[in-house]
Image 1 (tube, rainbow, N blue to C red):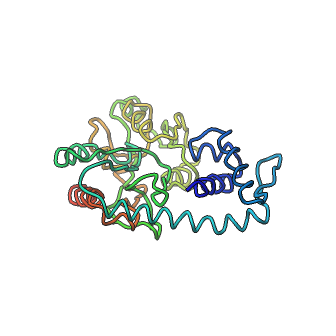
Image 2 (cartoon, rainbow, N blue to C red):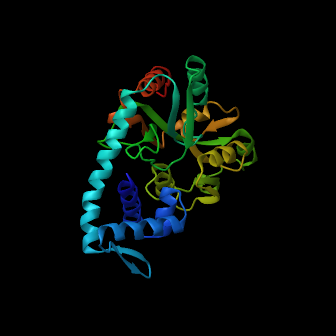
Image 3 (cartoon, one colour):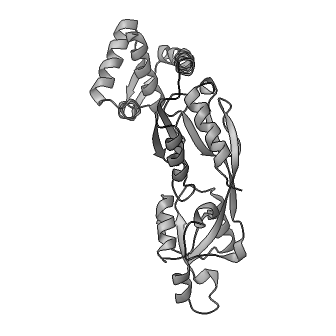
Length: 285
C-alpha cells in the first residue's frame, strides 16, 4: 500500500509538471510531495524526474513508469468504485457536481429528495469545471455537453435554452427606439466558443460591455438589478419577476444537460435512487 501511495504522488507530479501543482491536486504540502518522490526513487533505485527551471521532466525510467502507472491507477479506482457500489445502501453521502445557479437551480428538488430520503447526505459543488468522476472526486455530475465521456453513464435530462433578458427598470431608462448597439451589455466571461458570446460578437460587434464576470450567479444578479442586458437560461429567468425577454424571445443558444455517473457506480443504491428521482422530477423542456 505504501508503494501505491508513492505511485500516486509520482503520477500527480508527472501530470502537473510541478511539485506545487501536485500538492494542490493531492491537497498536501509541498514538502510532503518532495519527500514521497525522494522515497519512491530510493525504493526503485532510479531517478524518475529531471529538475528543470520551469518544473520537473520525466526521465526515461519515469516515462515508462508513468505509462504503466496510469493503468494501475485506473484499475485501483475501478476496484474501489465497484466495492462501493456492491456494499451500498440508501444512506450515507452522495457527492454531486452541478452547474452554477443561474444556469440551473435544482435546490427545490434537493429539498424534496431529502424529505423522501433523510438518511442520504448531499454534498454539492457548484462549478463550471469538469470534476472527475473516474477518480472519485464526485459520484454524480450534471454536465452541459453535446456528448458525455465514454466512461460515464446516465441520461440526457433535456435542453437548457439561453435567451437575452433585461429588467423592466433598465428598459424604462433607455431612450426610445434604442439600438442593441447602445444597450449596456452584461458578459459571462468564459473562454471563447460560448455560443451566446459568439452571437453577441457576430450580431453586435460594437456592443458596449459594462459588466463582465466568470460567475453565472453574478450575471443573473446584474440583469435582475438593472445593470443591462445579458444572457441566462429561460428555465431560471422564469423564476424572476420583472425580467423581459429581448429579441422576441429568440433562443440564442441551447445546451444538452446530462446527469452522469461512472459506469462502475451505476448499481449503487444511493446513485440509482437519486438519478431515478431527478429523471422523474426535473423538467426542462
